[in-house]
Length: 183
Image (cartoon, rainbow, N blue to C red; front, side, top):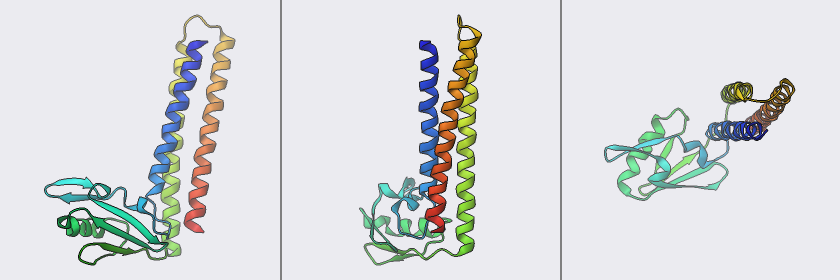
């Protein structure tokens, strides 16, 4: 049964990573509030190499509607501004000479619905990942040598319980993000 425990803990750990990935993907969706996480996937062309924005500047939120980006090198100011403008976030950076201010506009109803749709797509990707991990774990359970059919059935039931638990977590994370977007 040690193999069974190992398979279950491995499945649980990998499914946990699927949840982390979902939360990371949902973190970049704009909710109408200033959140430095929405800039996480923006890369800046900085002296010939591309770098994530948080590696060339600090990002702060002085209030609920404003992001302030302060580059560590003034030479990065224009590339950061260009990267934000070129992104699909719909943000309009305002260069003040040594910092960039971004006023986060209120989301339109149409944009909110589009974001919820994107969130649901991310959640479905996470569900698929969890199901694929379940399939892999079930295959591993069937490969264990020297155990009876009852133990295989019990192992499969345990893997299914773990899967159900993580599918429920995906749904909870999605529901929380939907409320954040629509609220």
